[in-house]
Length: 360
Image (cartoon, rainbow, N blue to C red; front, side, top):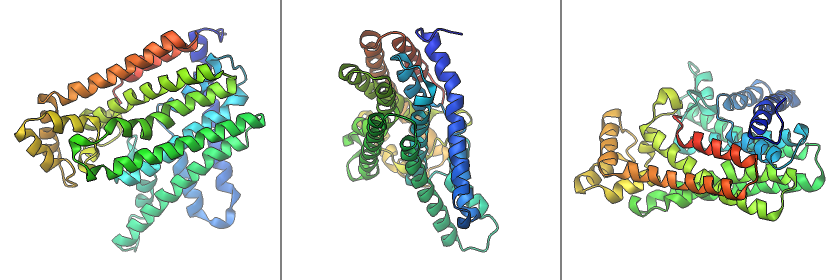
């Protein structure tokens, strides 16, 4: 057995314990499906579609929780598994609700909760407006169930009360911060694209719930001191920003067969990402005119998207956005190397490297 006090040991702990996290999520969904038999088939189907949402993901959030716990001295998988599962269920909730805001019905190459409901209604006698109402209702309520589940998994965990309360507080922080980021994102069309505070949106909307909170949850359970918590907070913020900037690039330049997500939806929605902010800022007059005509157009097709990509490349916007992503990855790497003890530091550096160069 690989010693836990090594990078390979932490990696082995994360990889092996992720199976228990998945089993915990499956058990949670299965039990929830059976709790209200009077609610009928639709209620059970909604839970089932939620259970399908965490298939095929990167497991970034639970992995960070498990790694912080094991890398800072934790040794009991039973103590950390429910909290790691809560981090993944929180992520599921965020994805379901974010897909509503973006009008997406595919996630990881499969129908999401909204898309699943639309398929269920294929051939029904409902009017188009009724179908849309069903689809929206399923996604809203499914996301709410996932949010409640993130609390439920922690509140029922066999943990000392102070650990449970601290982790529940972290979930609340994640939800509030992400909503603040979503508001800035959704209301971004009220300001000129080149004036959008896209890095703040990325920090609030993604970095806190995806990296900071999972790391702090694992550290809490391992008994980390306030100084270590501060270092992890800084690392998580930079890692989350780098992750989101790469994700934004993949949302325009990625391969849908690999990412499982459209490369048109962000452009159609007119997302005020750092990539597009820089595009509007750095393009020449013709390029800005093309971006203004294409970005935010709900009917944008691949031909127009290709022209947008040309502007983003030729203006240098894509390279500059990726440079910012690399800068934040370097900050995260430096914090890990200089402030985080081994073996967690080594695990995190490897993770940062893999996320920076990921294809999906």
